[in-house]
Image (cartoon, rainbow, N blue to C red):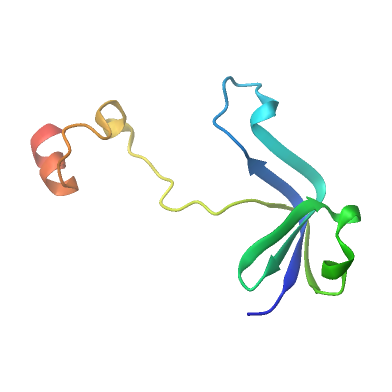
Length: 99
């Protein structure tokens, strides 16, 4: 794998928000960088603070785009919200029996 830097607005969540205006649960960098070495994150921070060992790597510049973690199956179905995770059944059994 090759080493590279991703540049853009970086948003990282550190914890679950305690309220609607809980800014302590996240980090937002208006001009951030993520250094990736062999498929793993090696460094994250302001682009201007990029360490010298990463500054020669290829840079994918996504400004003004927002760079953040991917979402895996981040959808929901409203009719199931009240009973998500209940009864410990397989999905199809659960749908047929409880919803």
